[in-house]
Image 1: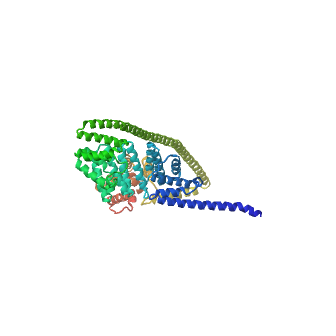
Image 2: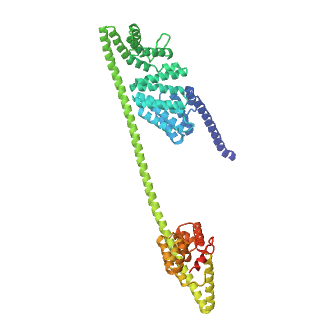
Image 3: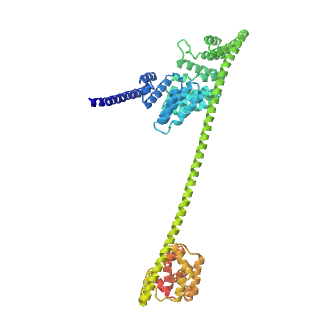
Length: 583
């Protein structure tokens, strides 16, 4: 019974874990399904996301953040305005720590859309810029669809802020990224919206050129309705330039293909100001009745400030053409009154635009200042690190060098010390041997000398005589010869002055030998004479090569030439012994 009591909590725990895993798996499947529906049916996706869990807080953090991200994405696609930034700010912050670049880009884009709906243009643009910076345009799986929407949102914001230069740049970016995403309609629409930026920049030729291109582009797709939707701006340009035939052509195209008109010729709600455009055209070409008919249509919407202003202005022009001064005065007063009201609205809009642009520029400057400050801190940190490295490495290397020199000094001291002891022991042994048996000692030393000469002969092509003349000993022990042997041992070449000293020494100690090798009949060159002298001083070929700074093969060739010129013998065999025979 007790065992059952102990096991029961464990069983309950297992059941809860399994249940949680099942719920989580089911939630993930619903999120995946909602994400698939997001582009085509965002309303259905939103409904599905809302049913994922009765209490989202009970979900794991990663799943909850994904749920909130997808809900915001669906809400944005449904054009449902955001009313608070708290949720998306938390989502963006979480994905900054745990998400990949694509997820972070989407989170910041949606946070920008939140600030857009809250009418905080600078914050919205700041988030859009952050989202753009996170896009990895070099990756094969770059989310070009989201990226082109970000640039489109930025273009719309700059349009509202009255900044056509920035707006134009964003429409160009939208076009480029939409083409990467293979979203032709989005790309063409971005291209068409450039005309409105050029219109606000008073570049009317660009407006006409772009609109003509847009018509051709959309007609190529069989979408004349989309082409017609972008014509009002160019119609206004043609009317301003008094090119009424072209204006009429574009108006007919607009009315026929846009889909904004019913069978009676009435335009859909929100676009009634077009009646003023029609009246303006008919008034300009002298069709007063048609102009008046469209003005009567337009005046019905006088509650709309824009429609009333256009209607009173065109009625004033209409009655001016009819030479009815009283009506001109009436509508002039109405136009002035409405124009004042419109001016107040436009002034408020201009102030808001200027404020938004100021805030944006201020935010940009703040960002630049922070970036500069970060660069300064980074530079300071690098300098501190470099100083620390120098402060550590230089003393360490100096310490190592000092210890190395100290070890070398100790080593040399030990070598000398051991050498002195060895010499002392050898001297004591020699003394003991000499005192005990002098003849034996003499025989040992003579044998040592014989063996040493044998070793020396191995480096020459002749044997070293046991009986060495005083001149030979003087040559070998001379300061010049000793110095040159040391140079050769270190691998250093001799100077011309040192080589000349060899010739001078040979001339003084062995004049007969010198006179023979310098006889004109032998035609020995200066270098060959130097080699002969160095051979007599018991320098071996490798030493001569080092001292003359030439190759060993070159020394062999020189020796061969000397043997031929002096002794008529080919090769170098027995050259050393022959030269030693020259007294």
